[in-house]
Amino acid sequence: EVQLVESGGGLVQAGGSLRLSCAASGFTSDDHVIGWFRQAPGKEREGVSAINSSGGRTYYSDSVKGRFAISSDSAKNTVYLQMKSLKPEDTAVYYCAAVLGFTIWSDIYYLDGRQYDYWGQGTQVTVSS
Image (cartoon, rainbow, N blue to C red; front, side, top):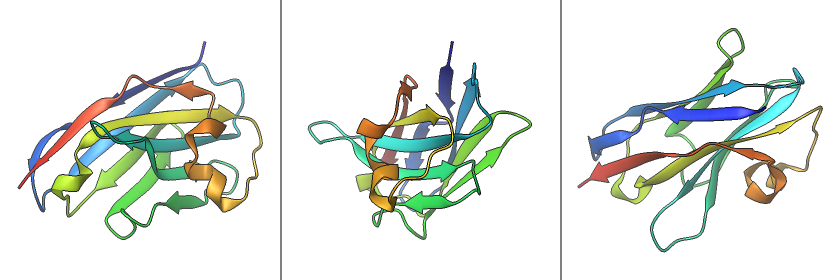
């Protein structure tokens, strides 16, 4: 059974940093894509970042490019989202999601949650002004 468990959320002041973790288990393939998504109250889910294990290419939304960095540690089966220069508008529940198997998409699909099969329970990030 595939499981994704997020951690690392919390309350931080604007300009601060947080590192989110997504611990994965039950993967049946070394090839996979892990994405980070977020949803603020009253807003649609937004794709934030993704990483493809096949080649390690990374993807970012324009709203976080240059401030967030996604990385993976295959030995720990964990994907990280390092968030810097946080803004109040980054406040949301952050979810990681996965799709297994060798995957090559057009770039726009990596931040489209409809492409992902497995989801974690989410972790709250609150940025105060």
